[in-house]
Image (tube, rainbow over all chains, first blue to last red; front, side, top):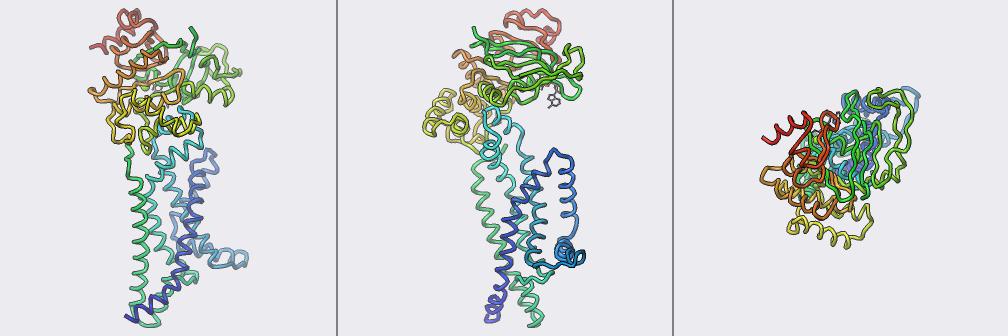
Length: 216
Length: 266
Ligand SMILES: Nc1ncnc2c1ncn2[C@@H]1O[C@H](COP(=O)(O)OP(=O)(O)OP(=O)(O)O)[C@@H](O)[C@H]1O
Ligand SMILES: [Mg+2]
């Protein structure tokens, strides 16, 4: 038991970093995703093509490769080094923005054309139509997909250790080899499990909040 | 009698397909016009052009004297057949277009109610956001309109809990909320189960008896005969016959009208 509490204390030192990566990715990645979704729907062929290419590359290559590329490319190309933590945030935001964008886009496309048309004939402005008519429906529709993505994000933060960032998983691995025990990994696993449970609970709450109507 | 709506030489094409070929008609204040015609004849497209949901290719639309088209530019795109002057339309300023848009109400075939808002909120949202009325005033007026539509028991329900007939009556109430000068209905009963058609036709009749100006696209020929002051029969993007219901429906002159009515009255 002492071992367990002790490990919990050690690994908790990485919890802050894990949560910081998680929260910054959401705070920066969601607005970035909205911008990418808008660019993806753009009428300008070039913007559209670049966005498609970006989403293709992000979704078609391993995230580990992307992280290493973003951190080391400036070094190999221009002999420039920069902060690891900045690099990991850039990598996560660039990666997750692509996934969020696809979710937002499918959410926007899933709203029937008639909603916009009805709002237009009633005299709503474009902004009013978006914020008062479309957005509440889009949010309801994308919650399940967002829930999946956010749960995957908390687990994916463990990739940060590959450029030497000390988060939960990095500490657990260090302790495992140091103590020659599997227990640190189990404790780390437990911590991720608890975080995922909290996220799932929050999303269930949100989905309930929107369950007062069904979209036909 | 003042003219609420004037459609002048309207042309609308989708790609190379002419959905409307040179259509003209007008509607006077307090008049009910019914548009009938087979599938694909352009009835919906006419309403959508008037409600600015589609851009027109030639002609003009006037609502209460305001012109939708400001100027006609010369261009050599349209074939001579439909537009002898080969001109391209330029829409008028945004402000006039908004004003015209508010003077037109539109009732859709599949209701298009806002699912996340209650029936009352569906009706009051435009009063509050667009007409800038206070919430209290909007609630009071909205309740009154919904009561007239026979929905006083449903005002706090969400659209998903209403029958099709109730949804369509709610959507008519929502249109009345902006107090339009003219109301367009595109097959308001086509998406309904047969036993629900009657309740919607009843409220439309009620509006007609209040001297509301309306244009109704319908496949309910009997209803059109009963309610309309004038009937237009369309086929392949053109008006084939126009006149009083007793003329167009009971004694059609054109062969195409006769064929169509025979199919529908069977
Ligand atoms: N958005 C569109 N894009 C391309 N073609 C269209 C579009 N909307 C309508 N059309 C075409 O325009 C013509 C007229 O269509 P419209 O919907 O106005 O007919 P309608 O008389 O309302 O028919 P229905 O009784 O089936 O509703 C049809 O040939 C249709 O295929
Ligand atoms: Mg139609």
